[in-house]
Amino acid sequence: MRYDLHDFRVFSNIAEEKNLTRGAARSYLSVPAASQRIKHLEEALGLKLLLRSPQGVELTEAGKVYLEHARKIFAQIELLNSDLQLLGSGVSGRLKVLANTTGITEFLPPVLHDYLPKFPRVKIDLRERLSEEAARAVLDGAADLCLISGNVPTEGLECRVFLTSRLVVVTPPAHPLGARSSLHFADILDEELVSLLDGAVTQEFLRQQALRLHRELKVRVQVAGFEAIFRMVEAGVAIAVVPEVLVQRMNERGTVNVCQLEDEWAYREYQLCARSFSALPLYAREFIETVERHARTLQRDRSTGSNL
Image 1: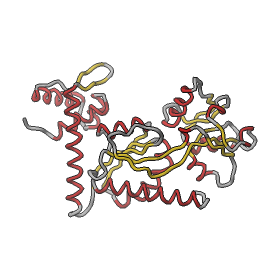
Image 2: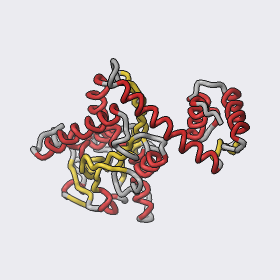
Image 3: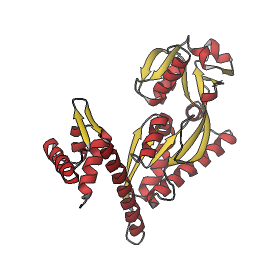
Image 4: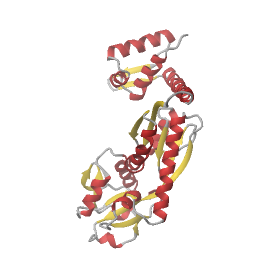
């Protein structure tokens, strides 16, 4: 049996998208061309790899095995390229990173600001996911790294805690809850909230916590980012639940009151996870070092009481 790297790539794209049309687009192929390639691959293997339906595609058991090995092959190729480029003129590659909302909005922008000029030929594929979903994707080989927080199953992964923080409640100065230094999540479920848009990772996480208490969030206003949330709270619209690091950066003038959430899940250990850190190519290991360096600076600024 002769294997073709392009077959591996086309099949992986379709499997990861769970959709023939989107997978074909990622492979820069027309849908008929991608479909024909998969058909020829299945005929050559004598096995059915995909089951197609109006809802998308589903992997057969043979398809799952093929995808697992395809991912291992591409990871090994990336490692080979990285090692060879150490002897050449520059490092290039593609790093797929999954992160929760706080990771994308608060931690990673300054990391990428420092990292990308040093590795101009490395493409970062950064996507927002719930922590549990992100960890599962790395374990399955669908991503290289994930940045997660909370009580998430990580069996089978190598993980490094790089920062600790918590979720807090921010209120307008005149709000009755503003006089409290701490409270529980249940204490705010009768209050109107400013939140992220539906589908945002943090919003979905808070919705799940409310459902565990057999309650629903009373959302008054939804906005596209944490900074807009903060401005809405400043203006007295409603209260909100946000990451502590956001408050450190934005509340320099003390325009909102901050109450700690006492719920166990509100305390967050932020972790970087990979299947194997040592097996990652050089540019991925350098990315991790950049994240950890910024985290050390963040913790130092917090301990000295300075604002970000």
